[in-house]
Length: 375
Image 1 (cartoon, rainbow, N blue to C red):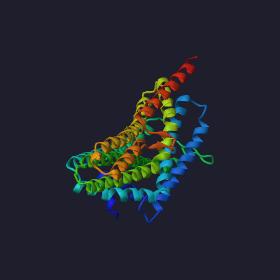
Image 2 (image 1 turned 30 degrees about the vertical axis):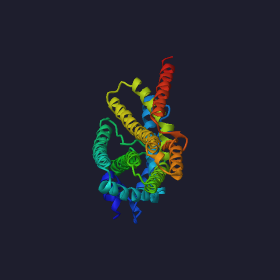
Image 3 (image 1 turned 120 degrees about the vertical axis):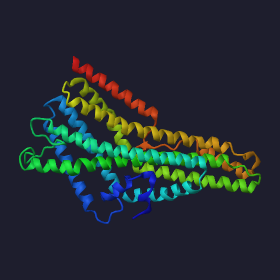
Image 4 (image 1 turned 180 degrees about the vertical axis):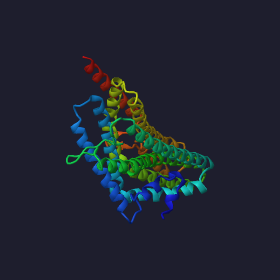
């Protein structure tokens, strides 16, 4: 077993990937079965969407949102499977880094690291409880109707899934395997992403502290310490590049779909009178806001902290150093002018300003749809 599986920073999120056969697995059976179930469900969702497109606008809106969630889950599954080795290298790189800071770091940085670890562990527990509650709520919701209803509504061309024995088979698969594992993978992916961003912010703080602690009177000692900081900065940049590579396409899906999903849910919420559906819509809206809101918040913190490196470099006693020292300071300041941003598909930075822009656009489309529906 790889040592990073026991890394407190990621809690049990890495182990969830391992248990499901997504990483560090010599036996691909579980991964294959999980992939087959996801693909079959996705096909059934698409078929159901086309067949119920013009039946009821409320149900169509709910089906569209569920289809978007299944699509997002399928995308995350593909990302993990295709970039399995890159995920493993990310964890392998962070594990000794975490251990070194924990054992030899500045007390202030160690204190922040402990707080981050506690925060991520609470986040993991919350995600686990949310998965259990969501599974039970989905189960109860599907049983609240007089007619037969699956947890995830699907249809297929050659048979009726609501007839025995197909209904019992699909209901059991969705209840025992699809919904729990989907939530587990989905939320573990989110937790790993948020944790990596928080750790990135921490090591930037550590770099700034190392720069401000350069106080040697000896020119050569000062230069060596500053070059060590440059190497540390390069290591941080490489880590952020790895996170960007793993997250970019997932973030692009967020940008392209979140605004539309939020708009549809708001519109759906303004139209329905069914008390059974209102709590489900509110939960979906809260889930969407949680996922994208925290992602943008921590990505924005990472970018903001990366700009502080330039100030920390300027705070060093460069005026007492030699010419090479001054050149190194100028290079680091110049390099730190561009923030370390996580982007959506390499195009759209994850910042709080852009998050607010998405919310404004969503509300604008909602107002437009509401106006059209009232005419």
